[in-house]
Image (cartoon, rainbow over all chains, first blue to last red; front, side):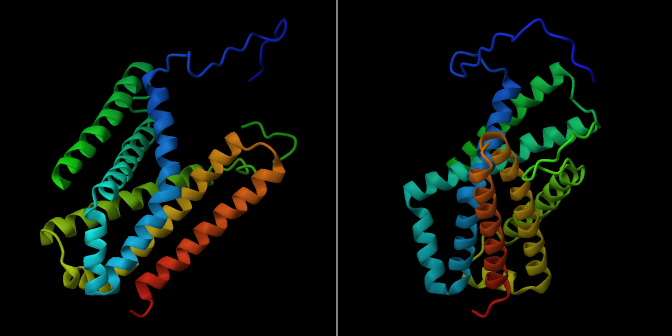
Length: 130
Length: 119
């Protein structure tokens, strides 16, 4: 695709704090943040937890006591949200690949749906965990 | 697709493969997530004995390893995209990507140790 010739440098205004982001942009940003979080914290935490919980009945109980701590529970809840948001936001991409909800209107609605569904399900998990 | 004149040393190599891999690995992870939640719901929560028995099952070990392998590859594509977007200098990006790969390979080894190592 040939770019049209431009008269000169166009003004750039990219103050992220001043721009009101559209909902798909927010969902997309959270998709990336949740992914990074799952890589940096989620994977090592899950492997450590799996190892500890399988090691012995004593370490299994110690692991249960550890994850029952309110601060740890809250951190796990953040990871649950990250997993859910990443999953739902990812499904949006797969749908868009097959041209489902790829138009602006439906894409905006699925962005709201994915973001809200992840938060709502996280809330359900949180309520059940407490 | 128009190919750039010079390929970027630490780019995504302009392939369709990673785009597809991101989808395939996602489907594998969704399938395992549903299987895992199904098993936990079926048992109505697992005590240590049932938990150990679950991971003593050869098929479940293989399924778990497939999940982790899909997860690690998926994480590589995603983390590489992040470094490509935000880390421009090659002298920073290359070691950073190397560290990410090292971590992912280490996680793969750790997973094999957990699943098949003696306990």
